[in-house]
Image (cartoon, rainbow, N blue to C red; front, side, top):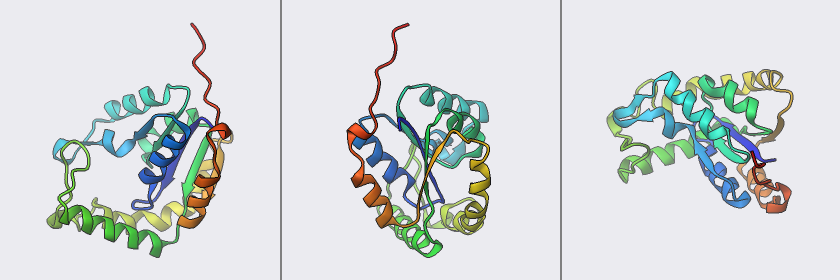
Length: 183
């Protein structure tokens, strides 16, 4: 387990788990949201986003989080492990609602100067409506997508407690990072 993708619906805790996992394993962490959301909430051009995914996943060991289909063929092909946060809808929605309120109230900067605002919280592509659009659809579709990447070890975590226990059970020795081979 050296090249790991963490997926899950919006608000499931992908970035939080991916950061903790990367820290525990001593490898770099990449966040697809940071590459996709340019200043002013502009979406990164497709080739620019794909170049970021390609550059990050070219390394020997890493943890990357995100569900972006536009880079899936690169990241999933290079990963050896996929961690799927497949939590119940009520768990994710509660987390997402609290996170959104906290970010708005605290004027928290997310990526590239962007912040969530109350006036934007209900727009179609904002996290709350996006949850309702994608959560149950992704739960149905994910297992079929895994078949396209049979080399991946899939770790399906169904509750935050299960994820915490899984992370705690990992030791740095569980995922030895080999130095790059000399050219």
